[in-house]
Length: 165
Image (cartoon, rainbow, N blue to C red; front, top):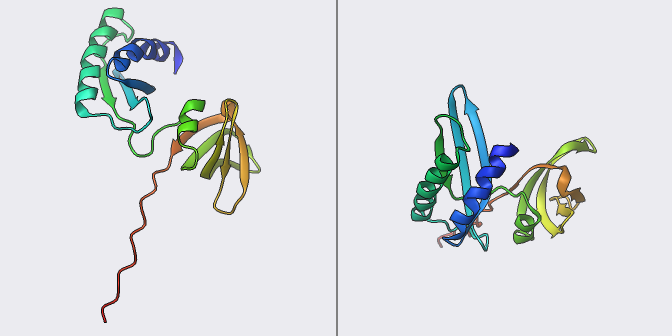
């Protein structure tokens, strides 16, 4: 995330907290002269029930604060949103909230020829997580080896249609 990302998170944190929210993630991207600052907000309980009004209010306050602190040089676009269905997981607390749910985890190095694991998160500790895949294979992954992790939204199975008699 770099220095600017850390500064943005430090400025955005208290602004989000005023609305009972927390900063889930900060993304900084640049394409030519166009810069994008993307901020993802979440509720303190991790429910993801962030309203459009919440995003608008945080965006207005954050935009003014970023300009006042001159964190982002030049023109930029600020985007504030909720995490969505396949929310990013970064901290031990994020993982702890979704124990029992399906996750996709990509590590920074291959283990047994694989970098990505898809399965049920069964354990989340400060230093590691444990994921069990559909074949029942359990993998312990150190938090500091995770390159990217997301919750995998699971749609409810629809009951089979009844046959007419």
